[in-house]
Length: 627
Image (tube, rainbow, N blue to C red; front, top):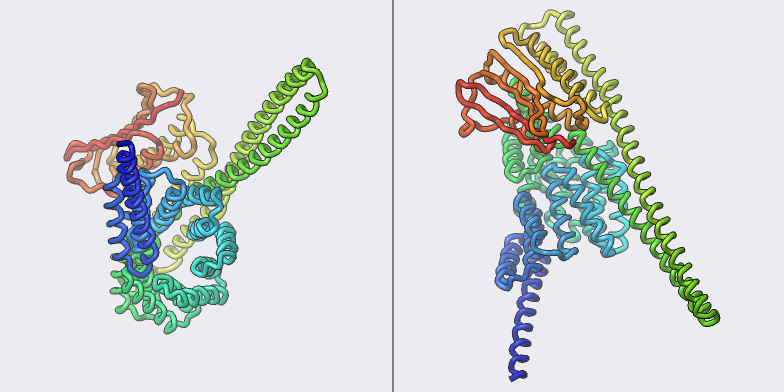
């Protein structure tokens, strides 16, 4: 009977092992072919997922979901790719599968323009790969981090990470990896204006991709070679490479990459006065980029639209698209993103060095302990039991003292690192605010002065004069926005009094401009000791500013009231108007309301928007106070 039970248990063990191996084999076979046949790879992975789910094998479910995410990312379906890799992290604790998921999410976030999130996930992946001494995967992740820095114009850091990747790929003789590194370094050379060097690197990358017969790689490299020829004014060569890239992207179904090729063709046609042909390429680029949420291609398509309508003598449409272009560009290339990337880099490097120091100290302590043990054993053979007991006690006390000393040294080092990091960040913040004030502020003032000189120095048509007035007002508004930002950056913390003064100043300006509207602003029961960080204070100020702008722009009110109160350990900010209001259920929220929601989220505050037709609108923000 026992033998029968043993046989049955063995049978089910083998059956489970077979199912598990089969799911993993399907996963590996799909990853071997996905570059050549994405749909077949997806089909194989979905079959493997059915098997893993049937056996409730969470590790294999996580592996297969992440592999699906990798394939969909390669197809440019970024939202689906990110969702699958995030789901994979919920199914498995396997560190290697998790590292692959982190890497995939990081690359997807980079393509979506979420650069600080991209760095965060890529550093998580890199930490695991370095700990496991997985050189190829570490090289790939170094390369991906370099691309994020390159996208944010931080070229010295980008080159540093690309060269790390290059060294490892060359040791591994990984031609695909070498090709990608050369391609990425070439992009930096192109951005810095060294076109000859950029063309040399791109052509080397293209040659490797042709040897590998990687159609996606060939398409990307051909597109980059075309771009360099375009900047070198060799237009016919540029068009040949761009069209070759677009043809290959279509053939393999990489519609996310297709947008870049269409944008490049449109840009060449616009610059060389083939304007009518350009429109269809811009439309295709914008539609494709919007569908697959490729941030850089959306940005370029908006700029191409502005250029197209300007060339067609339609300045109003050109200005609309140019505003859309600048707004979109600012949303993905803002200073906060760069600061966040720098903070994550400092955090990663600091943590890495601390681990190395701790590992060295642990090794030394272990060797010292081992030596003391040997000495104690030798002495124990010679000395009486009483002396051995005394020596043991002394050894224990000494070791305890050393441990305390090591702990204090570690705590002191951590404190020094934190202080140094904070000082560097404060210095960087002050330097940035000075640059903004001295350079950009002066340039904007010069623009206003130049516009005034144009208006009063020449007899200009009324329409052009009005347009110059509009630009002047926009530039003046930009100066005010810049001053607000500098005000916040120059403060480590913002008090209620600071905030009240800034808001009062803004409301006084709005009151002078809007004669038919009555403004009121007051605070109630607010503790003067309440303080906010500069980011929190700026977000509160911007929410109030945005709410007043929206009321002035859309609501046609006669009264606007701003209240700041302290209620139940929370600061409550209210902006109330008696304008025409709107129906919350049916209205489509625009950038203003969405920006307020986003800022409230960053504040970790609650926001409530109440509005009814003909009964006005109220914006209420509640920020908890830590006392």
